[in-house]
Picture (spheres, rainbow over the protein chains, first blue to last red):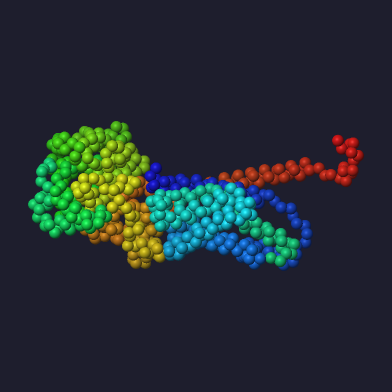
Length: 219
Length: 368
């Protein structure tokens, strides 16, 4: 199979398969979560806490002062990675073109050099996070195969994208094919690994916020 | 027919000055990415080189490659180099036709067995015994096998000969294949492009005449000196790509400002060729310079690589249908899981037995 054939497969059938698995998997998971059902809390809700669920969805993205002090590296690298990843995903011109083509929405791109720098920072943050996970005894103890697999699945598109843009290691066409395939792999496994947090974080934050608000906790 | 005259003698006969000849050698050296110190060596080698016999086979093709080579801009040193080779058979260019033409081919193949250069343009149909393209009643497939036997090396000119090209495009009704799919025991140089840049063909011939070897090739069998870098990397519009400035249509502000054509489907990033540096029509311009994105014509399967006007990062097949089917399947499957879970929950509720304090206080003998 030539590099071009692989790229064409990735842009055609590969994407169709990945998207199908992704959508089915995501919906199955969501149905499963929502159909679990919760027992109705019969206690009287505390006043003025009706919005606590929605508020928590946003407020949990902000650092908690105590935790920030205690686990500063995790916060720093976590923020760097997430912000960098979304900038690379959403503001790199070829990616925007993909969104424009598939969902019909487009927006202006950021300069390649800026996206490039941010991507590199994300990669470094991810590497440091892996190092920290392996170094820290508690983190290491708590880590499962899922954690390492999720790390690899996230790292692959970032790294291959960076290598492709800079024409490193492999010919561009092949690296581009690998980059697209790595994203497809990410899509396929997203519903079945911890990467599902991209969606479930909103659900769990709302639920926690709502339950705590009901009890009158200050959020 | 090839004769005993050296290339130097021939060029002088045609009125090429020493200065002109050295300029050509310098240009060739730079094209082939050789140091300038190699220029005298190239000049000396070309000077002494004997006219090699070249047999040019045109198979399933459109003659665009020959047109490109002969009509590019004449007279130039490129065309003179072409004159300097002994083109013993080329059924578009030769005066002879019919049996006389085939006789010339057979004579050259016999006389220069093991020494002649075989140039092929066009793909080779293999389906149904190769009946879809024949010359003088001989199928292309048979003629290639026969001519390749005595060839020193084969130059596959154009994307059809190099990778199958347009005839190879899906659904490939004639079973068209590239030269390298058939001939496995000869050095093959792929000079791809639809058509290839004339100077690239000349450069490859000059390299062969100078060193007697074939140039260094990439993984697709193309000379690295010409196909080593992508159009995108050498494109004068590249700074706009890096700045995120793109033409959205062919006549908008961006297009007039000469911004990057990526969003209009330019295949420059995955296309390896020398267009952006050597350019066309005596260095006048190349497609991107005249406002159209690169089609990727020097790459395998460029014809089947999705629309020419679709950005490289977008899917080549629509994903809406697959997404809709997946969503429907997901909803049905999800609902089934939800029902099942509910059922399990309800069953557990029904099966639940309440334990009263009396049950716990039963005499120990009865509990058994």
